Figure 1 (cartoon, rainbow, N blue to C red):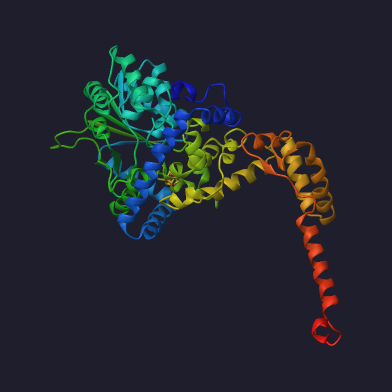
Figure 2 (cartoon, protein in one colour):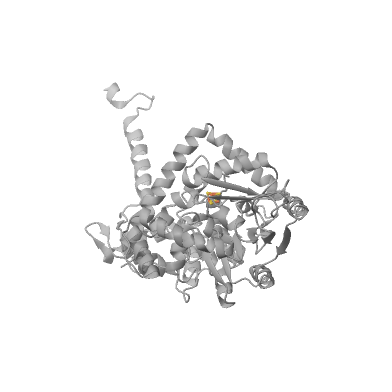
Length: 502
Ligand code: SF4
């Protein structure tokens, strides 16, 4: 069974939270997926560590990057204004959109004005976030993904399962099968052959597209420039060959100056792929100017809020806007590494997705469940180049869910009873004593190998040691008694030991 068939995208009927368990179960049963994700994330993780070593004092760089991002987000209104003014001064158009619907409407009105039939897309997670392809398809506008990974997924009709390696769950044979279906001829599952086919196919789209659509890795406020990084050069083609270039970006993707850009680009490339710098870094300032040899005649920049501004001023969650989408947190997350991105059922997966999705969607009931897809080990924080404390945020999200009474009734009752028991020594002793007898029907060879629900979920793949008859407290009390007794027996009235006296 192919990775896509086994894990694929979330089924449309599966909601983010309620479908999480079944998607995780499917992914865990897919050996190929688990191996593929672990293999690639291992490589990326090692690359990041090596690239960080080469830079020197990595912690100082992290601190600098965090300071730049925190400063920008704390003064986002100022920098957005400066950025928009500078884009307009260079002849570009800027649109602030409060949600996905408005952003899609804006894009469609640009497309309609140009009677666009074909849109060539560079990699853009924000366009995934607002489901732009779907809306374009509805209007009869063809959208072609030109990032190789995204192109493969478009053929497979799947969504990305990783922020920077969207087709992380596919191998060469699966890709060859997709290309065979597309081209109607057989393909060797060789990287060179497959890449050559994609290159030849996509080249025509670059030349024929009415609109080039890209995301934006960083907007530079002091000049109104759009920075795009890619390893395939497609970002450069999409943003310069079609007559119209539309940028769709999250409102937080800014840095104040080029000096700041240098720091964050270093951190992005090293944290994402272990490169010193991404192969292509394009900095575009305005549409084609007089004397320019290439470039679009029109530049439109759509700046999306979609729940981001709700986090501004929040003492716990504002920092999530510092994210530079490097995916380092995904590569080290023990949950992501086992189940891959589709299990999350959302555009943004891994630890950053588990935090970002409920906040952007303002949905604690379904999306808030993602906060439980974490072991809270803190590896994401250690890997994050801008030091976002994702593990703390996940705990706060869980707390929020509990406060909103969105956890299940049995869970609420269980934790309430647990708290009562731990707050009262008599109840605690009684409970631990009864637990010893309650476990006996499930004990085999000194271990609990299959418990009743919900314990059965735990014992399905591991066992629990049985509770001992004498608790630690009992043994401690006995020990204290024994010591006191020894003291009484062993000490002479004048303080010398009895044996010595004899
Ligand atoms: S949270 Fe940090 S590690 Fe994760 S994608 Fe964002 S910047 Fe990278």
